[in-house]
Length: 315
Ligand code: ATP
Image (tube, rainbow, N blue to C red; front, side, top):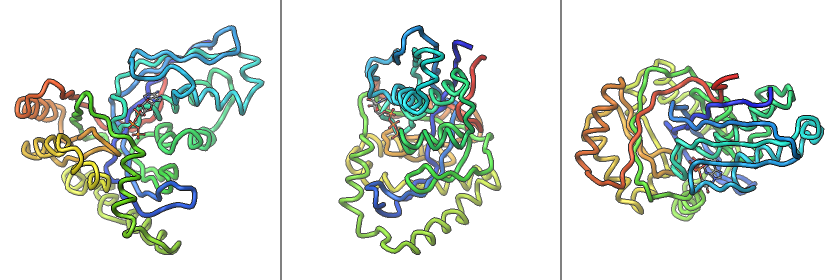
């Protein structure tokens, strides 16, 4: 095949705990990640010349080597130079539906789609875990974006343990159009303010990771208990993002006032999501919060929890 079309879902965090510093400069994390049906579409096509080109229908997404989708193709070219020699270069077309710099792993999922698509187009025959190891070189969220579903993520977020799939929950998402929070800013500010709470001993790390593994959030997921999951949502980065961005707090409070299962900022923000048990309830909450805050800068989406990561739209 000379072209593939892939669906690249966004993710939300149901749980994000910052455990400590790592020797490589990243944070040691314990997270629960969830794929949702809000997704980009990535089309890849073989071209005659040995080049990588990226196009995106969103003006703020770079079309050059800084695009994570470009970086994924460049990584595979570097690892498998004979594949590009045999099959030619690649044109990548990104149809962006996931808001950018939103805490929804939009760039990471595009990179994940390029890895999965090029593996097929260049007939590399890589396993999912081989693709995930390559993906971790591009970004910590890329392995999860390849795998998808519901998973516990530790380390930098690249060590995954799949959890029971949740496909009975819906989500309303909201974001201020011109508000972006840099992931680097959020983690650095957290380190400045809370590093005294970081663990310092290797054995403490194992204890903390085990606590999340056998903790109430994982148990609620195992029981597909939407109400408990909603009550147990947790994100340490809210401690730095909410005081700095009152608009995010306002959204969170507006969702709360609608009696949703739970509400929280996703990842490093600024997207806020609310969980509901049905699509009709998600749509009701969306309309109610839109009326309540009445700000034309606010964008809303509804989505469903999904159990897949990157998948083919058509073959
Ligand atoms: P995460 O949740 O993984 O922290 P995010 O959703 O907050 O990610 P992205 O949407 O991935 O953030 O975008 C962060 C920055 O990365 C953007 O400001 C953009 O300049 C750059 N970027 C590079 N490639 C892409 C891409 N394919 N899609 C979106 N942004 C990209």
